[in-house]
Image: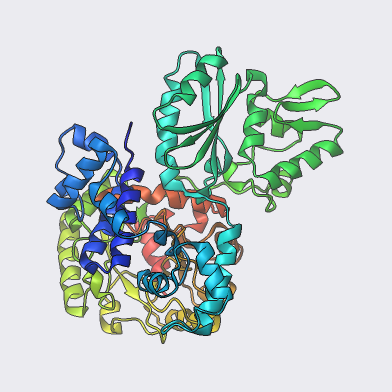
Length: 572
């Protein structure tokens, strides 16, 4: 049974949750969380690294003990430390930690005082008023819990894009190696590059459908077979996601690809357009009465409706059909149009790799520049820099730039926005930088008005350049903080500031709709990796997908500019 990086990540995160509920050392808990983050960002599988006898301790935050645990997972498919923790602490309690506002301490109190173990127990306790009576909770907390539980119950289970990507890559390679298989395409929300995926839809053309289906349902990653037919089969993967495989005829492949890529709203819009012209459109093709008119390719399906091919990322029924009809579809940004990356960390703070290693990795990607934006002093857990240390880093970068040809390290910092809107370093040092990525890292629970004013007040500082991860969300674990994003966007425009599209797969922040709103206001955005190691620079692909979903073109993105134009744009 293959072990994916996502398997190791899940085990480490669950162990960290259980240890935190148990009251273990914060350093020990953080070690597992950091290890999970490291594994997620790796460009290669840990299983292969172990097979090739690579030294795992060279990875960020991985010492001898964690390396041995990773080897144990790969070799046995389980982790003894996790099994022991599950015996001491109910694994169901980790589900409660997914409810925003409930950290490990509160979960532990709820379990010990009220016997709460499941979301159902939590709802019952909240509805009966028992939670508000506990010390450290109160009526407001109880109301917030009920609100979040309501959201939790209505949300379908979805998986982060990067986690699904690993499964998809394995399945695609597996199916392409099957005799007789011609075309293989993963459709659905994965193809539209949504930040989360509910299930995986795969379409293939093949000479012998039965052989493809038999091989698919017996794949080593399959945990449960849901259906097994001649042209369609469904399975549940070990990670819990459902995968549907369909074998379709060549003459219907484009129509099926359009239909199963979706979204549902986009498909309905196209169906209405077809009906107006006397056509019927479905997964088998475009028909006039019983005559098949188009369906072999997506291009011919759209062309029959006098439309150009609409990129999958735009298919959300947000005006793309009307824009296509008027010849006004955006020329979406592509990865090779980026000239550099404007948010990256090094081992001067909480990154793994040195300035030299980060520069070399950026040059290998074909970049002309990379902004070094290590954390500042308000975040001691990241070893954030005070003015003296930042000044030393500036001097080191200046010396490096004197020696490098065709590549520039930009001097920057990820500066904390304090609760009152001040930046956490003095202006005299911030003036020495090429750019400041300014971010909210604390006090997420401020009211909508206070959080909005906090950010806008920070933008009033002339050294403010880019608002980092603007909504503060962590997909699947932390909701966006309350903020009036429209006011923030307008304030950024009026003050000649910019916003970031953070490419970390657990952030993808701005959201796609806020990206589109920012574009409509004329704002320029930075697509940045927020890399904490050299390999993390490659996560930029997730930000590109998010930008494309937000209708962004190269002209909307700061880091498509050459260095001279970028520096001019960054100056306020």
